[in-house]
Each structure stands twice: as structure tokens, then as C-alpha cells.
Image (cartoon, rainbow, N blue to C red; front, side, top):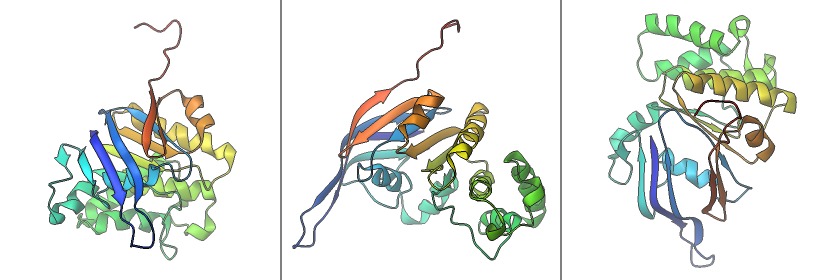
Length: 234
């Protein structure tokens, strides 16, 4: 689903400032149906990792392949289609404040010219999936941080993308809600959706016992598979 092959990313300086090496010789493969945490402190390279997957940036060297597309050769006009196969949940939610929860999710479908009858079927279903049936008519200012995060997740899910990418999904919500959001992502993963969670919260990654990729100073320094529980058949 997502493959990095010898990826290097350098942000060039402007003459007064030096070049910045954001990622260096990154090699990894996230397979279909996996749940993966990408860990790293601020400035480790996590944001660049995301931008390369979304094709907001291009690799300086190497190849990034997402859903079978080589992003080093993808045409500009095809980038929107690439992104439709990626459901992205941002840390700051990015909800439109003048739209209700329903309208925020529906908007993600309208901009891709989905027929209104499909929107009317799909949006209530997805809001129910994330536990927001009674909040469809609420505006973001009327929702808690956890509820806003659920709207953002519903918006990411509405196109049934094969990959969900969550960027610090628990960064702006109370700690007690963090586990709820992660359990929701785990449920989404259980039906075959690939889930990639980019975060600095190591304790959360340990709690859920999933594959963990650690990035430090632009390099993958650890790639740990989940430990098998005793008594579970191989």
C-alpha cells in the first residue's frame, strides 16, 4: 500500500541558511490491512513523511509508492485522484466552522461531484459509525474536542478509502478520549482498512501493541512488529 525505497528529502537553503536534510535513506513497506504507528519527536521527519505520501512534497531521491502509484512519475492532474484514496485526519481537525457536522462530512463528497442521493445515504451512516448520530446538526463550536475529532474521522471515512492516515489524532483532545479514538481506528482497521497513525505518544503505541516505526533525525531507527500474545495460535 505504502512503500518508501531509498527515500531522501532535502529542503534547499536560500544562500543564508543551509540545506535541511529531513529524511535520509528511508526504506519501509506498509502492507494492506496493517495498523502502523509512526513515532518521532518534533522535527524528526514525521511531517515530511506525511507530505511525501500526500504528494505535497516530492522526494529528492528514491521512490514513494502509494496504492500502486509511483509518486515520482505521477502527473499533476492525477494527484487529486491519489488523495481520494487516502482518508486523512488532521491534528487541528480542519472543520469548517459555519457548517454542521453533517455538512462538513457531506462537503467532502460534494467537492468530488458525488450525487446528492448518495450523500444522503452515506453521511448518516458514517456519522453513526463514529458515534455522532445525535450531533449531525451541531456546529463545531457546539462540539467537544473529542466530538470534533470524530467528525474529522467521519469526513476521512466517507469515501471508504483503503488507507486512513491520522496525524497526531489525539493531540488536541483529553487523554481519556485518546484511547476511545484509537479504539475507533482499531475497529476501522479490523474490517481491512490500512491505518497509519503519526504521533509522538509512545505510551499510546505501546498500549495498542501494533507495528511501530520510529523516525529520528530523518532516519528509521526502529521498526518493531507487535508482540504475539501467549496462548494465541500461530
